Image 1: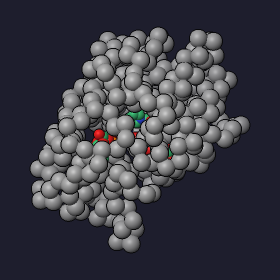
Image 2: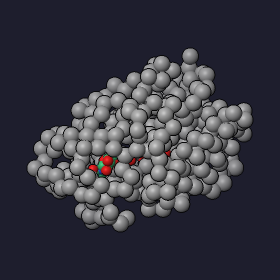
Image 3: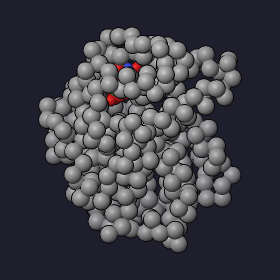
Image 4: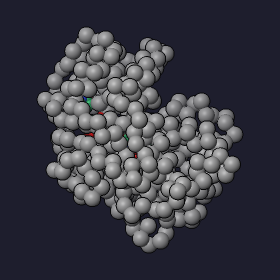
Length: 342
Ligand code: NAD
Ligand code: UDP
């Protein structure tokens, strides 16, 4: 059923684009621990070498600073390519929308070409944002989505959609063995404190005594997957011995309103800072919940960590990070709120 990716005796060369980011660094940990040779490629836009600091000096790990929009270093070779390069936080990807779009299109093309040259398995980190503001619920892979192609989120949503298009064209043309994961909101240790996404914002706000910024009424929903579950899903997708016909949703089907998450964070941190309502960002999707029947069937994958369980280690990690950061470095790293400039 699975390729040798999980067999430590058969070492594979794995390229992780976006490997210094939140998800990418956890994926690198997983792969190095299983005996693979890992090259992480990253331009450090939203990720940081600090996320991989514990791997630096490891004989099977290398971190290369590189923007995937530029032609890739000629000496790169891989048996498996994971493409996670792209800012994932709305304020971050909207800060340079043209670069975001180019990362998902040109960057994906460069990485697909590398996979094609080396006959490598290619795993694309796509997103639930391809469903836009969905009018089908929960979202199944067959749903084509409801995306505003000209709004402020389009650089990401349409970039990722175009990335998927490229992937399936390479697959149909027989150029590369491509697998596309549609990832739903994922959280955990190593999210950047000033990243601007909901979990990092709420936890950092609670830990620093600020009110939790709820956008709109807070009745919009998201489904939150813990990072270890997501990494397991990505690896299972890469290890599958048969190329799936289409994209595969990876996410935790537990669905929560933004207000529910705010209350959970306040309760678990013991913070008394309360909630501050802020305007809802343009085109903010109202509902999000993955249908993961395909991932269960194809990969035998199911998320194990409930939101109530994953919040604990996430809060602990942010608490340690905020404590160990020198006061001067702490100040500019406030959570990034809606409408704030970068
Ligand atoms: P992240 O911002 O922490 O990681 C992205 C990494 O890519 C960062 O290290 C960043 O510096 C790097 N990067 C960005 N543009 C680049 C470029 N042009 N060249 C090289 N490196 C570049 O975000 P994440 O949450 O770890 O997300 C990883 C991937 O998963 C992204 O592609 C994202 O779209 C996708 N995804 C994540 C989620 C989530 O909830 N975490 C949900 C859906 C999809
Ligand atoms: N959100 C919020 N307060 C914040 C950050 C986000 O209420 O401080 C909301 C946001 O409007 C959205 C949800 O939380 O409805 C998830 O936002 P995030 O940016 O994490 O991801 P995405 O919108 O891409 O799913």
